[in-house]
Each structure stands twice: as C-alpha cells, then as structure tokens.
Length: 202
Figure 1 (cartoon, rainbow, N blue to C red):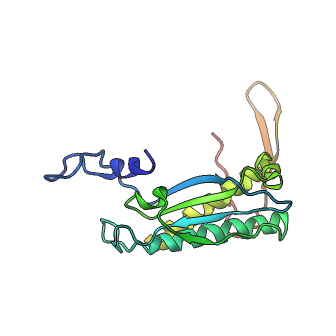
Figure 2 (tube, rainbow, N blue to C red):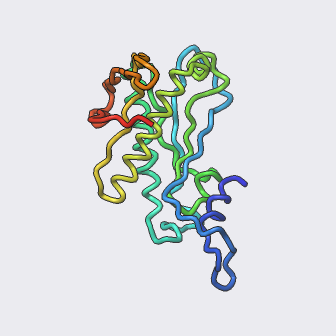
Figure 3 (spheres, rainbow, N blue to C red):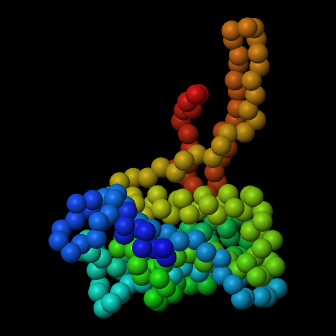
C-alpha cells in the first residue's frame, strides 16, 4: 500500500462527488520505521529522517496545513532519538540529518509524516544494538516521546511522559485475604515529567 492506506483511513465514509470512499478515521500524523541498507563501516551509522515538504508542487496538505510541519516532525524525531541514545550509549549516536525528498512513504500521506531510517541493517555495529532488547525499548520510548511532544505542540497542551515501569516489586501473602504489595519507582533521568505521584493497582 506504500502509505496510501493512511489516506484511505482518513477519507470520508460518504465522500463528495469524484472523491474516493474511505473509513473516516481522524489521524494526526504518520510515521514509517525503516532500517537502511547498503552501508558498511566499523562505526555506528545512526538514524536519518525523511520528509517531503512539497508534493506535486503543492505546499499544503489537503487539510490546508503546511507540509513544512513534516520538517518540524522529522527534526523533533531525530533530536529526541539522538539526544536520548547519546546520553545512554555515548557520543557515537550521531544522526545523519534530514532528507527532504520524494520517498513514497513521505509523499503519499495527507498528514504530517516522517520516514525514519533508524540504522543500517547491513552494518555490524548497528545490528549489534538493533538486537538488544534494551536498545529497542530506549529507542521506542524516544519515538513515543517525539509523538507525544509533537501533538502537544500542535494542540497547545502540556505533556506528561509515562513513567518507567516500577522495580523491586513484591507481594507478601499475610493470610487468606490480605497481601502486602511493595515496589520502588524507577527514576527516568532522561525526562523530568516522567514521575508518578500515585499508582493504580488493577
């Protein structure tokens, strides 16, 4: 589908004449996650973000929003990912910059879109991290924070990043009807807002 599925989801269920029929789902943004190929070195390749600020000589999406917003989205994505990964893994995580070109994943969707080339799957150093579950979690959390902050900026509200999972959890059974639960909060050194003031037990 190469990105056209996004437009199908958003298009109206009862379209106007000569418009395609869709599902009428409201969407705010689109992101494609890739790993680059064909790059081999003894160093980390790192991420690159692709956007498209002009499509068919059109400066705006069909909603009227400027396509330049995808450039902001890409910049925020790269900044968040590289900042987080540098703090965790060191200065070797340098981003390769933003590319503004006609890649179909960045061109087709009619909403702010970024195509993230996270790393090179043909580069041994990158793949060593790509297979690490902790790296996957840290990178996924950086992507989540990017989306959260991007939407907060667009709708002008304050964001709060979800706290990290608790640690040292235990359950001590005292009798047939009572159990004492305890845990320790996990401090997120990368995000000041990710601090819980209460926990719900389900």
